Length: 186
Image 1: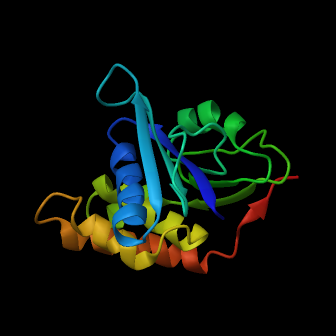
Image 2: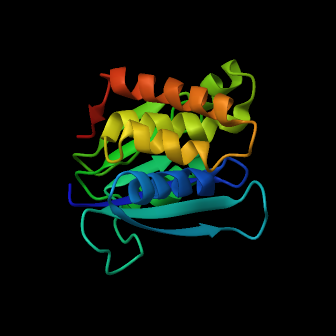
């Protein structure tokens, strides 16, 4: 794909903005692509709806805003309800399978879920659920290389947490790479 419009949605406190930042940084700094990121969030710091929008392209990006994402990643039911109508009909929806119940998807949408919060809790803290999801996104889509994402994580997360975050990434990546349960909405 020459141009990818990606939207990552969830609620404040889930690391949605950081997830988008890592994906965009990986594409630009470590994968020789172009990227642009915008973000939006509600008035509260935690608990309100938020999203990060990332455009990734082999060519220069002339318009930095996601209009119709071809990949939508959602980590909350509110984000699914709010953002899924904008997904292109043949797009891909990646979702937090313990928190999101799918309904009313456009025909042809490919879906795949991961219990990223549960996996993060198995690692000792649910705060890395976003990084598990970044790993799942990488394994499912291949839009950005595994090594580029690893480098972006290493220089984006708080010092001293790199090992935990890379382990979270690998768990999500493995789940995404081996997940043969991708479904197509009919």
